[in-house]
Image (cartoon, rainbow, N blue to C red; front, side, top):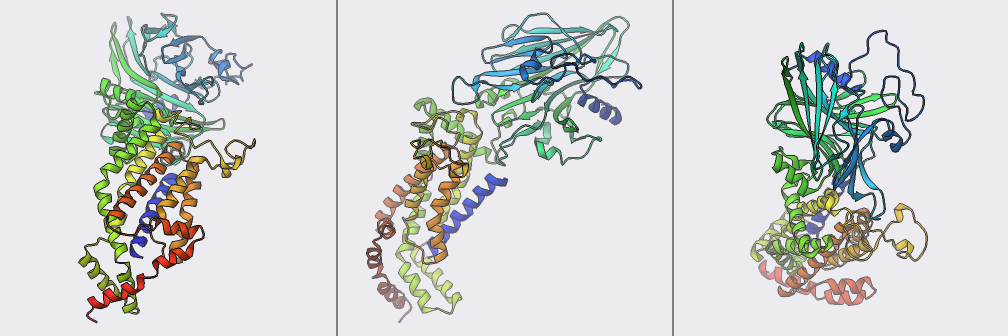
Length: 621
């Protein structure tokens, strides 16, 4: 049947897109490259020829011969290996390494690893000499004949602690006429402001270029979904948003024997950093000053190191004068309101792209705002999703009404369509001509049934994005056993929903909400006549089962949305078809499924008689 065929094609195409989406989807050049290689080695000048190689560290927590902390087996041991300046705010805790000045210890007070309120806090930054090193560093690029702070520099702090009300200044004198200072401020959320300055005392005059880097040691575990970007990224002036997964950097142009990456020059306005699903770090230079950005991976026998580096034009420091450079560092949770607030507060170009809103940005972000607004009234994100589903249905009601009306008309002329095939069994061209005339007389659009499905695909993906990437949905409860709308339904029919004490393999993970969704899809399929084509009939029969298993691994919030959407669609289609005076096939189809096939056949038996009569009359017989 033409209407069923079009409907099936629309569903198949939209689901194919869904599956594909989810499963696949100033310094001279030589000097600049030399400096970048040095940056990968710790932003320290290269050792002189003939200097002895450093010996292996004596023990974890000790200092290596070059003065840097030795490798430690645990994060706590790495933190204890060097003197530290504590960070304490209402939302963050951590510390700054006084040896090297790295911001390398950040944990989030408001976020925990699981829904258990006693589980550990989320850790974002960790020291380089411990497991999963991840840190930020700012300062001045090395220059010939000038000793600048590096990874082994021991700074002196003027305060015992950094708080949101009490900034700290670090100081270091190179003993050769230059005094370096680093003022660090932190706000009540996730933004640090770092101002590096250098003062040239008597007899000194220098030209130095500011830099900032974020470095991640080792390849982190990622979810691996093409719908979500995890890796290095940045907005680089007019070059816009640039994204590199960890794997993609390995395919970039080689910059040295061990390094690959991508360089962008002359960007004005923007930022650069590294992002996880819910957490991120980003360097934000002065938005009016041009900067260069590098995204690199350095591969050594010890493993891989990923780095985002920004460099700014050199500044001239006259004798007896000083110069400074300010860089902001975001490190924390990708809260929508917080990220948007920073974009507006500091006029950061496209800072909201730190959250992966996807290609449907123009739908995804407004949809989140709508859900968030409703959440503020109802106090539950799951309920907010149900309300938004109703609003989306209402918005598409005129289109759906027209579509279902067209589908109802298609059902009404099914006998005439069948008669045309009998009249012209060997002339498909004539069949199509007569069919088009029939559509024209009855004012039927054969593609109208596909429109609601096709038009709502972007909305479906947008909601998927919202549930999948926004931290506001993380650990957001619904009712009953759903404690995290962003995670799959934890119940399982193969344990009788918890009555049988065993843990089935992942392939047998099938929760209650996916089953509800599958049932609502099954009912929606049965609203239409059974296809005569065996292939189409098989597809209709198994599609709910297939999607029940497919969605069992999707966020519970999305499955709840789809279940509710199917239910509303059934009610809407039922009402429209009844108003059009067209038979609703639901009950006869269900009766056929449950063994009362004879009733369904008898109900459909009179159709052929009326079929032949009408076309024969119109054909002039």
